[in-house]
Amino acid sequence: MQTIYLDNNATTKPAEEVVAAMSTALNEHWHNPSSVHRAGQTARHQVDLAREKVAKLIGCKNRDLIFTSGGTEADNLAILGSFAAQPKRNVLVSSKIEHEAVRDSFEEAQRHGAELIWLPIDQQGMVECDALGDLLKKRADEIALVSIMWANNETGVIQPIETIGKLCREHDVRFHTDAVQWVGKMPTNVSELPIDLLSLSSHKFHGPKGVGALYIRRGIRLGKRSLGGSQERDRRGGTENVPGIVGLGEAARLAQAWLATDERKRLEELRDNFEKRVLESVGGVVVGGDSQRMWNTANIAFPRLEAEAILLLLSEAGVCASAGAACSSGSLDPSPILLAMGIEPEVAHGAVRFSLSRFTTDEEVDAALDIIPQVIAKLQRSMSAL
Ligand code: PLP
Image 1 (cartoon, rainbow, N blue to C red):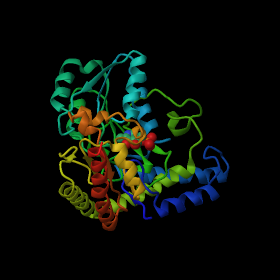
Image 2 (image 1 turned 180 degrees about the horizontal axis):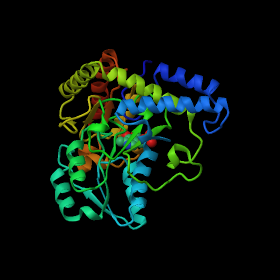
Image 3 (image 1 turned 30 degrees about the vertical axis):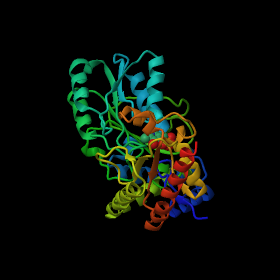
Image 4 (image 1 turned 45 degrees about the horizontal axis):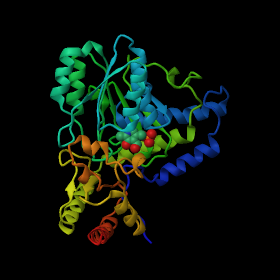
């Protein structure tokens, strides 16, 4: 049976070039980059080359980028490191549509005395910038960090990062963005944007899992979280994951080349056509987040059905999709992100996320479009038989 992989916001297939580069790194550059001998320095050079490629992808200087074990660690470090480094500022500001990596970091800071403020979200899934503006006018000098994601993992909704960053800059408040679902899929240039900290993750753009990076604008101080050696400019202790970092570097190089093409347009049309045809073939569905969205994400709710049941039948037919965030699939609670957008719980219960990648073909989407109406009809029949 053919596997139709439409779960690319959970993870993407590593590119062939990435696998080859990692294999060379494992076989030939397995030495410790901190060793003074030549073999160690060759491994160091591989790490430096990868840093250069990732820096190019997001438009920053090499020295402003540190490697982490992924998007989660980058978020943890940006948030808890900012809170620790500014003892006179006690307030952290974010939104309820963030990934758990951000929400849980906030809750950890709260256990250490932080006051948390969650900005409201409108029905399109966008953060309300006026609320942030009002808050900054009143309490800017108490705020340690504003953290708002660039693109949402469940709906693909794109936040007004430039406006938010400008507001923060005007009030001299630090701004972090979780750009895990953005970087590698959309052009990024932090040197032209008011962003102080940015998290990215390799496995969301055809790199390996377990490696990511945090961009830290020059002059931004952070408390250290991973204690130990002085690696990564003394910001993250621990021997570097050389093959992972090399894989991330190669994924960044490939993403940059791909972003220079207009393939994004083709895929966006493919996604739009997919949504249109699901709407036509299955009545009464709700498409989540119809505002500015990533080209690859379709969040479609099938009211009165359970997403878990849909996913199971889709999976049996070879289609991989997801309900809400990858880490919360398997739970029966509706997505807190969709609820924060004001979507009714009975609708949110049936929300399925289909996410494309640059490797997704028209044939795969066509095959999924044959299967989805059959699965939904089968579930609707079993519901009405109850
Ligand atoms: N932030 C967002 C928006 C994500 O979608 C994810 C992963 O799903 C993460 C953070 C965590 O990244 P990682 O899996 O690299 O730890």
